[in-house]
Image (cartoon, rainbow, N blue to C red; front, side, top):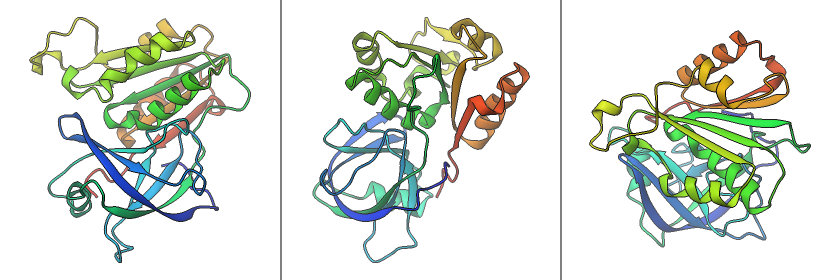
Length: 247
């Protein structure tokens, strides 16, 4: 994941709500002291779900925007993971510790000609943060999200995307499904992986765009190679690897 900041601090947060986002994916919404903890869109935190056990920790990209009252952390829940099992056992009202924020994965201070967000599955979390922040603060950045999932059921934050597009005239969201035949839902949208053709279709000036890539290491590697093969320079590409899904 992105390099962590050297000014991370430890704070207490309280779980308020748990949401089912997609099969096997849950969001944990925490109350926190906004006067004592400040973060930027696209940053990360370390969450410690068991007091007194500093070794049981995990890094999360923050899915919420600083404009929201609650801190949102979303993850895949795996029964074989001791960490995820402990996290999943938390109940509303439970207080836990986190350390942060860290990382530099947010929007540039100077608006780029176009910001292109490329992600898949649960790798969407920092992009929700970035898009929500840009929408709430009416930033002028032109943002295009290309988001891939295996089936329509796997789309995370599915209720948010149309709302954000309706509110933000600078935002375009393109969703593509790689295995629509495995779904019980009829999919009438794009089919297939994110590839060079899809990127060229929705990015007008490739040499001026800034690309953000987020997801499992294999996805990040594949998309980075695709961008490089299109002639995109390394200075135009920012990456965030989601490692340790089973931790």
